[in-house]
Image (cartoon, rainbow, N blue to C red; front, side, top):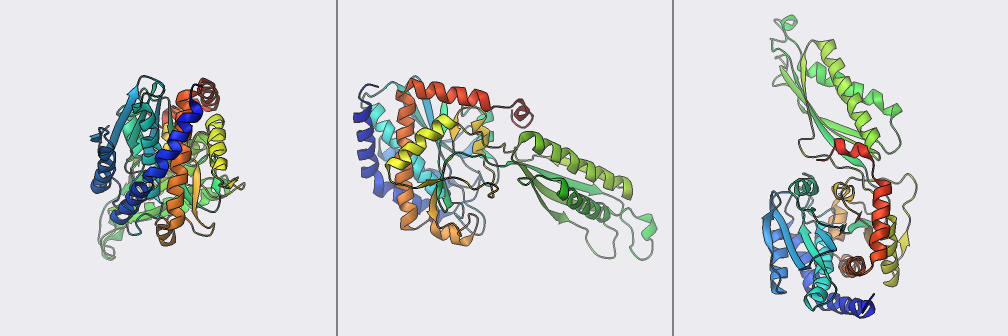
Length: 404
């Protein structure tokens, strides 16, 4: 690889020079704490930083008003760095997406400087991907062509404990079950009513009865969102909202069918009707690992002196719309620690951890490691071939039922 060592030294120097700006961006996004689809000021902050470095930026691309895109370079191969910046309602950046954004911006700016200076042939792309927490933004963007022509995609995600690379995630679907009955006076004429709440409660209990048959990595959790208006009116309408998760696409689809069957059984018992609404937000599919890319990223983390551990068997997993990218093109989504193991994402404590010196160190380390693997992908045809082989071997046809 011509001048590869010199290019990598240039990346290190660039990340070092960007340190203050990247940490400033992370802090700014953390303080804004804008939730999914509402990240106008966070997206503007990303664009401002890129503009300062002479790069063109578009906001409002690929079907989402707060999505961001910037490109530099010529021809292929093409790599994308994915930046998330949405927060959680009520507890802010309790998933550390401010760290993700700053890492990916640094990882984009560093190889961009090499490409602008007449370095290797290829293209680096920055994609700001909104609404990971509440809207599967990457799937929406993918359907609008965001990843067309992209050969590989990279990002990191903060966690507590040790850095981990590889592994999967839980696929996620959501379903709304809306039951319709007939209202009546609950004291004077209860026999004339059809109780929609009874159907919802029977469904809730029936879904609980499924749990002994679920696998260890399956999750089914829901709430009653409507249950009637007053105690003296037989409820004409009731509704449930469930999330269904599993580590495998086939199992996810199987649980979905069982859950729907429970609801349809409940309406037979109660004489009511049900409307089943699947995936008002697009489903998340399980993350498809790529051993070649994960191995190279691990090498770069080790070069930085970070301790890379293994995910303990049976350890909890969440869901990510990066999985939807990983079944389209080779993708990595390593987890980098910003806190101790007992500090869990989606807590107030993790939101605090996302704005600490340890998180700032992860911004720089993550940005540096992502920049190096992005450049490796552009320079190393053997890595591209190995990543493509891993991708082809891992993909399953069932995923087509959940993505378009």
